[in-house]
Amino acid sequence: MPLLSALSTPAPYHLFAYSILFGSTVYQSFFVGITAFRALPRQHFSALQVKIFPPYFAMQTAIPGFLLLTAPFSITNDKLSLSSLLITAVTGLANLAYIGPLTVKIMNRRKAQEAKEGKKYYDEEASEDMKKLNKEFGIVHGISTILNLGTLFVTALYGVVLAEAMVKGFE
Image (cartoon, rainbow, N blue to C red):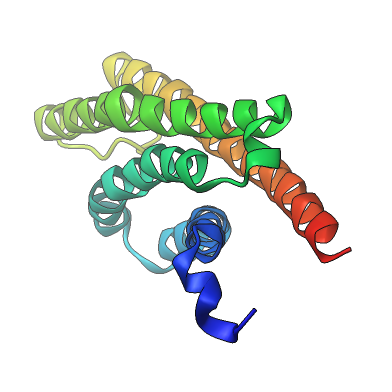
């Protein structure tokens, strides 16, 4: 098979899409998010995350569908790979459509409470209302983090299934 003939098959596009999904999830979760949190003032970090998360979660929602459409037959018949791609899409969609917007609403309510009180949300002398908002934010943010880590786990699991199919193809 000539070198570039693979470009006429779904295989390289499937591999590229998987690489983007897994790489972006690892990079955002363990490098960009942590570095930005450490380097930026809280307001700027929040503003950055509000802009990054919608396309990030949209990518986590859309790419699994593309992977299903371009997967080798052996993988599409595998319940583990199908369920891992479905879970990835559902967790991305949950963060995109519900958890993300809810987080932004809570952040906006905290900003309004800060303006009302004249204190930052992390001030030790914050009101009970602010403490409730902080707790609510912590819960919703925690759910988003768990969903994102679940996405990472099942995406890695799919990578193992994909690698196994590739190894079988090389034998």
